[in-house]
Image: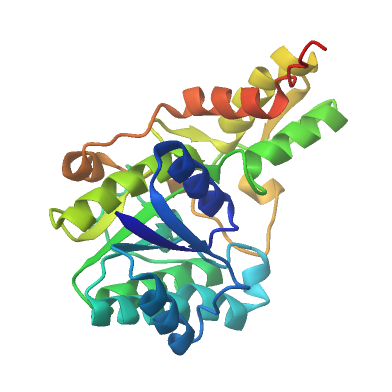
Length: 297
Protein backbone atom coordinates (compact mmCIF):
# COMPACT_ATOMS: atom_id res chain seq x y z
CA UNK A 1 0.00 0.00 0.00
CA UNK A 2 1.33 3.40 -0.99
CA UNK A 3 0.05 6.45 0.89
CA UNK A 4 0.43 10.03 -0.34
CA UNK A 5 0.30 12.41 2.62
CA UNK A 6 -0.46 16.12 2.33
CA UNK A 7 0.64 18.10 5.37
CA UNK A 8 3.62 16.01 6.42
CA UNK A 9 5.17 18.86 8.45
CA UNK A 10 2.29 19.18 10.92
CA UNK A 11 2.10 17.40 14.26
CA UNK A 12 -0.13 14.65 12.87
CA UNK A 13 1.80 14.45 9.60
CA UNK A 14 5.03 13.93 11.50
CA UNK A 15 3.42 11.23 13.64
CA UNK A 16 2.15 9.44 10.54
CA UNK A 17 5.60 9.63 8.98
CA UNK A 18 7.22 8.18 12.11
CA UNK A 19 4.67 5.36 12.35
CA UNK A 20 5.14 4.56 8.66
CA UNK A 21 8.87 4.12 9.24
CA UNK A 22 8.19 1.83 12.21
CA UNK A 23 5.85 -0.35 10.17
CA UNK A 24 7.69 -0.17 6.86
CA UNK A 25 4.69 1.47 5.18
CA UNK A 26 5.30 3.15 1.82
CA UNK A 27 4.36 6.73 2.71
CA UNK A 28 5.27 9.77 0.62
CA UNK A 29 4.97 13.00 2.56
CA UNK A 30 4.47 16.36 0.87
CA UNK A 31 4.65 19.76 2.55
CA UNK A 32 3.74 23.24 1.31
CA UNK A 33 7.13 23.66 -0.33
CA UNK A 34 6.59 20.49 -2.36
CA UNK A 35 3.03 21.15 -3.52
CA UNK A 36 0.57 24.02 -3.28
CA UNK A 37 -2.70 22.36 -2.23
CA UNK A 38 -4.67 25.40 -3.38
CA UNK A 39 -3.49 24.68 -6.95
CA UNK A 40 -5.51 21.87 -8.60
CA UNK A 41 -2.86 21.41 -11.29
CA UNK A 42 -0.12 20.91 -8.69
CA UNK A 43 -2.26 18.32 -6.90
CA UNK A 44 -2.87 16.51 -10.17
CA UNK A 45 0.87 16.40 -10.90
CA UNK A 46 1.55 14.99 -7.43
CA UNK A 47 -1.01 12.21 -7.90
CA UNK A 48 0.18 11.43 -11.41
CA UNK A 49 3.82 11.21 -10.32
CA UNK A 50 3.29 9.10 -7.18
CA UNK A 51 0.29 6.93 -8.11
CA UNK A 52 -0.80 6.32 -4.50
CA UNK A 53 -3.31 3.72 -3.34
CA UNK A 54 -4.67 6.14 -0.72
CA UNK A 55 -4.36 9.89 -0.17
CA UNK A 56 -4.35 11.30 3.37
CA UNK A 57 -4.93 15.01 3.91
CA UNK A 58 -3.80 16.42 7.26
CA UNK A 59 -2.95 19.89 5.91
CA UNK A 60 -5.03 22.62 7.52
CA UNK A 61 -5.11 26.12 8.94
CA UNK A 62 -5.39 25.35 12.66
CA UNK A 63 -4.90 28.72 14.39
CA UNK A 64 -8.43 28.89 15.79
CA UNK A 65 -8.26 32.41 17.22
CA UNK A 66 -6.20 33.87 14.38
CA UNK A 67 -8.74 32.53 11.87
CA UNK A 68 -11.22 35.13 13.12
CA UNK A 69 -9.02 37.85 11.61
CA UNK A 70 -7.75 35.78 8.65
CA UNK A 71 -10.92 34.14 7.29
CA UNK A 72 -9.70 34.08 3.69
CA UNK A 73 -6.49 32.24 4.56
CA UNK A 74 -8.42 29.76 6.69
CA UNK A 75 -10.95 29.20 3.92
CA UNK A 76 -8.29 28.52 1.29
CA UNK A 77 -6.58 25.87 3.40
CA UNK A 78 -9.60 24.33 5.14
CA UNK A 79 -12.41 24.64 2.60
CA UNK A 80 -10.99 25.07 -0.91
CA UNK A 81 -7.89 22.86 -0.74
CA UNK A 82 -9.65 19.69 0.54
CA UNK A 83 -12.13 20.04 -2.30
CA UNK A 84 -9.36 20.35 -4.87
CA UNK A 85 -7.56 17.30 -3.45
CA UNK A 86 -10.76 15.23 -3.31
CA UNK A 87 -11.74 16.19 -6.88
CA UNK A 88 -8.38 15.05 -8.23
CA UNK A 89 -8.59 11.85 -6.16
CA UNK A 90 -12.02 11.14 -7.66
CA UNK A 91 -10.62 11.50 -11.19
CA UNK A 92 -7.97 8.88 -10.41
CA UNK A 93 -10.43 6.77 -8.36
CA UNK A 94 -8.06 7.12 -5.41
CA UNK A 95 -9.62 7.01 -1.92
CA UNK A 96 -9.03 10.03 0.28
CA UNK A 97 -8.86 10.21 4.08
CA UNK A 98 -9.47 13.76 5.28
CA UNK A 99 -8.97 14.96 8.86
CA UNK A 100 -11.66 17.20 10.37
CA UNK A 101 -12.63 18.49 13.79
CA UNK A 102 -15.10 18.67 16.66
CA UNK A 103 -15.41 22.40 15.89
CA UNK A 104 -18.04 21.64 13.25
CA UNK A 105 -20.43 21.33 16.24
CA UNK A 106 -21.62 24.19 18.45
CA UNK A 107 -21.11 22.29 21.71
CA UNK A 108 -24.65 22.66 23.03
CA UNK A 109 -25.53 18.96 23.03
CA UNK A 110 -25.71 17.40 26.50
CA UNK A 111 -24.17 14.08 25.47
CA UNK A 112 -21.42 12.91 23.13
CA UNK A 113 -21.73 13.87 19.47
CA UNK A 114 -22.34 11.12 16.92
CA UNK A 115 -21.73 11.35 13.20
CA UNK A 116 -25.36 11.98 12.33
CA UNK A 117 -25.78 14.99 14.60
CA UNK A 118 -26.40 18.27 12.75
CA UNK A 119 -23.36 20.51 12.47
CA UNK A 120 -23.49 24.13 13.61
CA UNK A 121 -20.01 25.70 13.74
CA UNK A 122 -19.70 28.88 15.79
CA UNK A 123 -16.42 30.34 14.51
CA UNK A 124 -14.42 30.87 11.33
CA UNK A 125 -12.26 27.79 11.90
CA UNK A 126 -15.28 25.53 12.39
CA UNK A 127 -17.11 27.03 9.42
CA UNK A 128 -14.14 26.50 7.10
CA UNK A 129 -13.61 22.92 8.28
CA UNK A 130 -17.31 22.19 7.77
CA UNK A 131 -17.03 23.60 4.24
CA UNK A 132 -14.02 21.37 3.63
CA UNK A 133 -16.01 18.32 4.70
CA UNK A 134 -18.81 19.27 2.31
CA UNK A 135 -16.35 19.72 -0.56
CA UNK A 136 -14.82 16.28 0.05
CA UNK A 137 -18.26 14.64 0.12
CA UNK A 138 -19.32 16.41 -3.07
CA UNK A 139 -16.22 15.28 -4.97
CA UNK A 140 -16.96 11.57 -4.84
CA UNK A 141 -18.05 8.57 -2.81
CA UNK A 142 -14.61 7.12 -2.06
CA UNK A 143 -13.80 9.26 0.98
CA UNK A 144 -13.33 8.88 4.73
CA UNK A 145 -13.70 12.02 6.83
CA UNK A 146 -12.28 11.56 10.33
CA UNK A 147 -13.28 14.11 12.96
CA UNK A 148 -11.05 14.34 16.01
CA UNK A 149 -10.60 16.65 18.99
CA UNK A 150 -8.12 18.17 21.45
CA UNK A 151 -5.10 16.85 19.55
CA UNK A 152 -1.71 16.55 21.23
CA UNK A 153 1.49 14.58 20.80
CA UNK A 154 5.27 14.59 20.74
CA UNK A 155 5.52 16.74 17.60
CA UNK A 156 4.57 20.33 16.93
CA UNK A 157 2.81 22.82 19.19
CA UNK A 158 -0.14 21.67 21.29
CA UNK A 159 -1.87 22.05 24.66
CA UNK A 160 0.15 19.36 26.41
CA UNK A 161 3.47 20.93 25.46
CA UNK A 162 2.21 24.37 26.49
CA UNK A 163 1.22 23.00 29.90
CA UNK A 164 4.66 21.41 30.34
CA UNK A 165 6.31 24.75 29.61
CA UNK A 166 4.03 26.71 31.93
CA UNK A 167 4.37 24.14 34.71
CA UNK A 168 8.12 24.69 34.57
CA UNK A 169 7.74 28.47 34.81
CA UNK A 170 4.83 29.12 37.17
CA UNK A 171 3.58 28.04 40.57
CA UNK A 172 -0.09 28.42 39.65
CA UNK A 173 -1.95 27.72 36.42
CA UNK A 174 -5.55 28.80 35.71
CA UNK A 175 -7.32 26.51 33.25
CA UNK A 176 -10.87 26.48 31.85
CA UNK A 177 -13.02 23.87 33.57
CA UNK A 178 -16.42 24.28 31.87
CA UNK A 179 -15.47 22.90 28.45
CA UNK A 180 -15.22 19.16 28.03
CA UNK A 181 -13.86 16.90 25.33
CA UNK A 182 -11.77 13.86 24.45
CA UNK A 183 -8.01 14.51 24.44
CA UNK A 184 -6.64 12.65 21.43
CA UNK A 185 -3.02 11.72 20.85
CA UNK A 186 -1.54 11.96 17.39
CA UNK A 187 -0.36 8.38 17.87
CA UNK A 188 -3.95 7.15 18.14
CA UNK A 189 -5.04 9.21 15.15
CA UNK A 190 -2.13 7.82 13.13
CA UNK A 191 -3.00 4.25 14.14
CA UNK A 192 -6.62 4.87 13.15
CA UNK A 193 -5.65 6.45 9.85
CA UNK A 194 -3.54 3.42 8.95
CA UNK A 195 -6.39 1.06 9.85
CA UNK A 196 -8.74 3.07 7.65
CA UNK A 197 -6.16 3.31 4.85
CA UNK A 198 -5.74 -0.47 4.77
CA UNK A 199 -9.49 -0.92 4.41
CA UNK A 200 -9.69 1.79 1.76
CA UNK A 201 -6.82 0.26 -0.21
CA UNK A 202 -8.39 -3.19 0.01
CA UNK A 203 -11.78 -1.89 -1.13
CA UNK A 204 -13.51 -2.96 2.10
CA UNK A 205 -14.00 0.47 3.69
CA UNK A 206 -17.46 1.77 4.42
CA UNK A 207 -17.16 5.29 3.04
CA UNK A 208 -18.39 8.29 4.99
CA UNK A 209 -17.77 10.40 8.07
CA UNK A 210 -16.43 9.01 11.35
CA UNK A 211 -15.35 10.23 14.75
CA UNK A 212 -11.88 9.22 15.94
CA UNK A 213 -11.05 10.59 19.39
CA UNK A 214 -9.31 9.49 22.56
CA UNK A 215 -11.16 7.17 24.92
CA UNK A 216 -12.62 9.02 27.89
CA UNK A 217 -13.76 12.57 28.50
CA UNK A 218 -12.44 15.38 30.69
CA UNK A 219 -12.24 19.17 30.87
CA UNK A 220 -9.30 21.35 29.90
CA UNK A 221 -8.68 21.68 33.63
CA UNK A 222 -8.69 17.90 34.11
CA UNK A 223 -6.42 17.50 31.07
CA UNK A 224 -3.97 20.05 32.46
CA UNK A 225 -3.99 18.49 35.93
CA UNK A 226 -3.13 15.07 34.48
CA UNK A 227 -0.26 16.57 32.48
CA UNK A 228 1.14 18.40 35.50
CA UNK A 229 0.84 15.33 37.74
CA UNK A 230 2.63 13.14 35.21
CA UNK A 231 5.34 15.74 34.64
CA UNK A 232 6.01 16.12 38.37
CA UNK A 233 7.51 12.61 38.40
CA UNK A 234 10.27 13.92 36.13
CA UNK A 235 10.63 17.53 37.25
CA UNK A 236 9.67 17.51 40.92
CA UNK A 237 7.50 20.55 40.25
CA UNK A 238 3.78 20.41 41.08
CA UNK A 239 2.17 23.82 40.53
CA UNK A 240 -1.43 24.43 41.50
CA UNK A 241 -3.92 23.95 38.65
CA UNK A 242 -6.88 26.19 39.43
CA UNK A 243 -10.23 25.93 37.59
CA UNK A 244 -11.76 28.96 35.90
CA UNK A 245 -14.76 29.52 33.63
CA UNK A 246 -14.79 30.27 29.93
CA UNK A 247 -16.06 33.75 30.76
CA UNK A 248 -12.89 34.35 32.80
CA UNK A 249 -10.70 33.46 29.83
CA UNK A 250 -12.11 35.29 26.78
CA UNK A 251 -10.70 34.40 23.37
CA UNK A 252 -11.33 35.84 19.88
CA UNK A 253 -12.98 32.56 18.78
CA UNK A 254 -15.77 30.91 20.71
CA UNK A 255 -15.09 27.31 21.75
CA UNK A 256 -17.70 24.54 21.98
CA UNK A 257 -18.62 23.79 25.59
CA UNK A 258 -18.99 20.14 24.63
CA UNK A 259 -16.46 18.57 22.25
CA UNK A 260 -17.06 14.97 23.29
CA UNK A 261 -17.10 12.64 20.26
CA UNK A 262 -18.54 9.13 20.22
CA UNK A 263 -16.04 6.99 18.29
CA UNK A 264 -17.88 3.68 18.49
CA UNK A 265 -18.85 3.75 14.80
CA UNK A 266 -15.19 3.98 13.78
CA UNK A 267 -14.33 1.11 16.11
CA UNK A 268 -17.01 -1.10 14.54
CA UNK A 269 -15.97 -0.22 11.00
CA UNK A 270 -12.18 -0.45 11.34
CA UNK A 271 -11.62 -2.48 14.53
CA UNK A 272 -9.58 0.23 16.18
CA UNK A 273 -10.21 2.05 19.44
CA UNK A 274 -8.02 4.81 20.80
CA UNK A 275 -6.28 4.25 24.12
CA UNK A 276 -7.58 5.87 27.32
CA UNK A 277 -6.44 9.47 27.11
CA UNK A 278 -4.64 9.29 30.47
CA UNK A 279 -2.44 6.45 29.20
CA UNK A 280 -1.40 8.38 26.12
CA UNK A 281 -0.71 11.52 28.17
CA UNK A 282 1.65 9.47 30.34
CA UNK A 283 3.44 8.13 27.25
CA UNK A 284 3.88 11.55 25.66
CA UNK A 285 5.04 13.22 28.88
CA UNK A 286 7.52 10.41 29.49
CA UNK A 287 8.83 10.71 25.93
CA UNK A 288 9.28 14.46 26.22
CA UNK A 289 10.73 14.60 29.73
CA UNK A 290 12.56 11.34 30.29
CA UNK A 291 16.34 11.86 30.37
CA UNK A 292 18.22 10.66 27.34
CA UNK A 293 20.47 7.75 28.37
CA UNK A 294 24.17 8.36 27.97
CA UNK A 295 26.20 5.49 26.61
CA UNK A 296 29.24 4.46 28.56
CA UNK A 297 32.55 5.26 26.85
